Every structure is written in structure tokens, then in C-alpha cells.
Length: 301
Image (cartoon, rainbow, N blue to C red; front, side):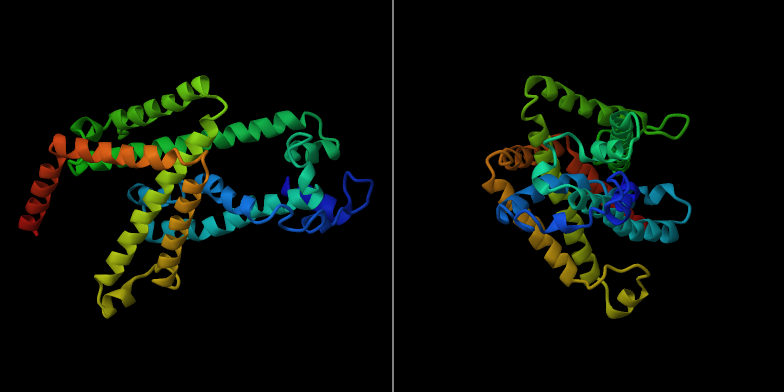
């Protein structure tokens, strides 16, 4: 779609040979025709789409050469976002005036139909479904592995730490897949609100996850002396400024979620869910297991 769109923008393909150019980016009221409020409120909905990039770290135990392959994967994420997210939006916003987007159908479908590709809607639906399945697959994989890892450290029920004969944490994967049924049920009960609810709660989960990662990174770097810091082979650029700026941005998004009535529910359900996990953690005695495991580790070392 990006390639076809660029052909329309530069060479006028599918538009009678008349190049559309990129003037639609600033025409019809400019970049913020209805003010910046809408753009800011969109941040909380957009963030959920980025949830999952932290899964690269989860795969560290699955690859043969993590030092090389993970650093390469992390570097490629920036370019993938720039090309497939920003690039696609740049093309769409250049071809169509902003007030027409969504009123005549999917801009992706319209772009393919404009150059005479039959079955454009079917092609886009296929792409959307495969992308959703890919996201679902990676989510189940990462969640299953995290449950397995927690069980190995005795911070989750032991049954999640069992592997099948093929080396798959079967019970952890089934539990992860079962959680998806909640979304299916909600889709039947409150179809008009389920998307906002799920994305908001996912955004809260992302903020919590990324916040913990950032705080852990800051604490880890502070624990190292100057010589140890020099030995780090893959460093966060402009540390610690970037970490603190990221934390400030996450706090800003939380404020936006509290401001918007539709997403405020996530700030109620999210903390309640975390509180429930803490209660179960202590009621089941997982904290005692953690202490005993840590003591045993110190004894061995």
C-alpha cells in the first residue's frame, strides 16, 4: 500500500497521471484543524498498538546468540515503526483530505481500488486477519513463557512450570489462551464499548510494564561502577535522560486516561487487578517461596 500510494503521490498512478502530491497534509485547516486536544487524547488509544515491543526481551532465552540477534532486532524496531506506522499514515494523509478518511471506507481499500485491483477489500481483510493472528500468536507465546518463568522461580503455581515432550509450557499457554475468551465474551455483552475498554486496559498494562522496565533499568545502571558501565555492550542512548523522559510521558498518558471518561475505567480496573494479584501472591505463600529461593541462591554463590 505504501508503494502504491507513493506512486499516486509522485506519478499520479490511478489518478489519471495527475500526481496528488502531499498538500493534503497541511490543507483543509492545517495539521491541527480541530486543535491539539484530539491528538493528545489519541495517545492513550495509540499506545496499545505498541504494546508487545518489550517481548523482544522475553525471547532472550529462546535464541542462540542473544547478544547479536536481540540488539539487531531492537534496532530494527525503530525502522519498522517509522516505515509501516508513520509511512502508511504519511501516504494515507497525503492522498486523502483528513475529513474524508473513514467516511468512504478503508483508505487502504480505496487506494487499491483506485488503481484497479479487483477484490481490494478481500486483500485488506486478509492482511488485517493475518496481522491480528500474528499479534495473538506472539502474545500467547510471551505470556506463556512469562508464566513458565514465574513458575520456575516459584512465584506462580507449579503446574505452569511443566513442559510438554516438545518443550512447550502447555499449561501456561492454555491459561494465556483462556484469558482471551474474556474479550470474546465482552464482545457479545458490550460490543459498542469493548474496543475502548480493552485498549484502555491494555494501555494501562503497557504503562505499568514499561514503567517497571524503566525503573529497573535506572536502578541497574546506578548499581554499576564506572568500569562496569563501560563494559556494557548495548546501552540505552542518552541515559538517564531518555529513561526519565519516558517515565514522564507515561505519567502524562495516565493523566489523559483519567481526563477521558471513556478510558477512566482502566484506572479503576487496572489497580484493582494488581491489588488482587498481590493478595493472591501473599495468600498462596509465593513470597515465602521467593525468599527461600533467594536464600538458597546466596548459599550456593
